[in-house]
Image (cartoon, rainbow, N blue to C red; front, side, top):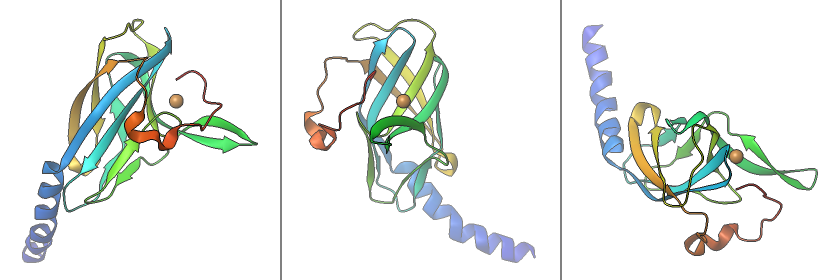
Length: 157
Ligand SMILES: [Cu+2]
């Protein structure tokens, strides 16, 4: 029995280790339309050989942090909590952008001003955690990820 367990671990461990080394987060920034809440956006890249799943985010800057997406409901775009996390495939990336998936910060411990940095801890489950600092930038336009433009009806971010 012990021999079988060791063999199984030998198969699983290398892929996991590579995946941990392969996560990169770029273009992180925060928008805040009111003193109570904010939304964080970023690109999560997985250069590893195994899938990683963003299961949750925590921050000292807010009482509650959730993964949200926008989905059309009865012709209106509405924010919804993402259940089960966001999978980032090996060799792929996931874009959190305005009008789409985002990190929602609710109950800000203090209002944010332009340039204020928010520290986020991203929990990737088996792939470990990552720290990212995202500065508030309400004037930012999403020229690099224009696919989200024109989705409309998304007030408050
Ligand atoms: Cu939201």
